Length: 407
Ligand SMILES: Cc1cc2nc3c(=O)[nH]c(=O)nc-3n(C[C@H](O)[C@H](O)[C@H](O)COP(=O)(O)OP(=O)(O)OC[C@H]3O[C@@H](n4cnc5c(N)ncnc54)[C@H](O)[C@@H]3O)c2cc1C
Image 1 (tube, rainbow, N blue to C red):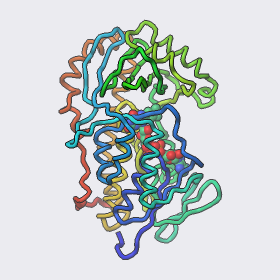
Image 2 (image 1 turned 90 degrees about the vertical axis):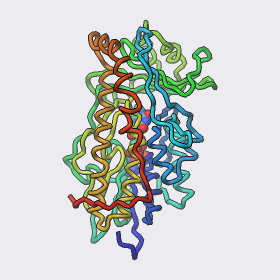
Image 3 (image 1 turned 135 degrees about the vertical axis):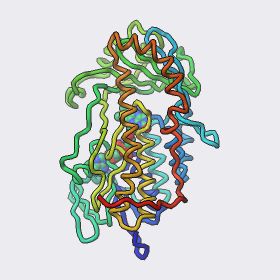
Image 4 (image 1 turned 180 degrees about the vertical axis):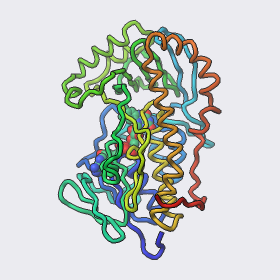
C-alpha cells in the first residue's frame, strides 16, 4: 500500500459484509464509502439468522460486536430429533468465547441495522439507490457505474454484493451461476403459548417429508424455519403466485403425522411467509483482478445449513483489509487474501451441502440416518470435529508476512 496518499475504496453492497469491509478498511487506513442498490434497507420482516461464535469473534476485532450481541439471543446448542420423535442427539452450535459469548440468533433487520449504524457512527458514507452496473478501469483506479446514471471514483472496488453479484460478473463474465441445492426455505417468527421455551437451543426435526427447525424464547416468540425438497428450481414468478395460505397448507400436509410442535407453529405463521430457493456457490474461480476483489456471498455462497454465511462474509472482509494493510502491491494483496480464505470457505460450502442432503433423505436413507445419526453426532459432530470451523481467529495486530504472487 502506498503510505503517502490515503487510498479510497468503493464498497459495493450494504448487507452484512459491506459495512464490515468498510469499517475494516478504515481501520487499515483506507477510506471507504458504501454503495447499496436499494433505496431503503431491504430488511425482510420475519427473516432471521444464526451468527456463529467465530463470526462474532471476528466482529470483535473491529469492536463492532456490541449492538449485534445486544439485539440477538444466545443459541449455542442444537438438539436433533427424528420425525418419529426419537431424540437423535445434540451438537454444539459454535464455541463459548472467553467472555462467555456464544453463537446468537438475530433478525436480519436488526443485524443489518446494527452494522450499518456502526459504520455511519464511524464516519463512513453510505449511498443508497446505487445499483452497480459496470466498472471502468482508469490509470491506477476505477469508475463504478450505477443504474441511476451516476458514477463514483475510487482506487479500487470491493464487491460485497451478494449471491447474484454484479461485481463477480464484471471480473469474470464466465463465472459459474449460483447452484440450486434442491431445497426451498420458509420460515418466520410466530407466537404460540403452548410451545415450551427452548433456552439456548435450536431443536431440529428431520421430519418424514421435510425438515423443521425452531427456537422458542421465554417471551413466546418462536423463530422457525422449514426446508422442503423440490427437485427443479421454481422461478420467482411461480413463487410469487403462491399465497402464504397455500404455503401454510402445504407445510401442514408435509409435517402431518410427525412428532413435535411443527404443525402448531406453522398454524400461527404470519402473512410474511414466503419461500426462497436455496443456492450455494462451491467454487468461484476468480475472486479478484487488479482493481476489484469479491467478499462474502459474491465469492462463495454457502447454503444456510452450516449457519456460517454471515460469519464468512465478516471474516473475509477483515482478512481482506489486513492484506491491503500489510501487502505492498494491491494485486498481490488481493491474491494473498484469496489464498488465505479460499480453502476455509470452500470447506464450509461443502460441509453445509452435506447437511442439506441429510435433510432430504428418501425412506431408506431416512431409516439409516435415524439409526446412525446418534453415533455420528457423538463421534463425528462433537466440538473437536468442528474445531476447524469455530476456532478460527483473526489477530488484527499480527502482520501478514507471506504475500502470494498476484494471479
Ligand atoms: C434463507 C436463508 C437463511 C440463511 N441463514 C443463515 C444463517 O442462519 N446464518 C448465516 O450465517 N447465514 C445465513 N444465510 C446466508 C447469509 O444470509 C449470507 O451468507 C450473508 O447475507 C452474506 O453476506 P453478504 O454481505 O456477502 O451478502 P448480502 O447480505 O446478501 O448483502 C449483499 C448486499 O448487496 C446489495 N447489492 C446486490 N447487488 C448490488 C449491486 N449491483 N449494486 C449495489 N448493491 C448491490 C444487496 O442489496 C445487499 O444489501 C442464510 C441465507 C438464506 C437465503
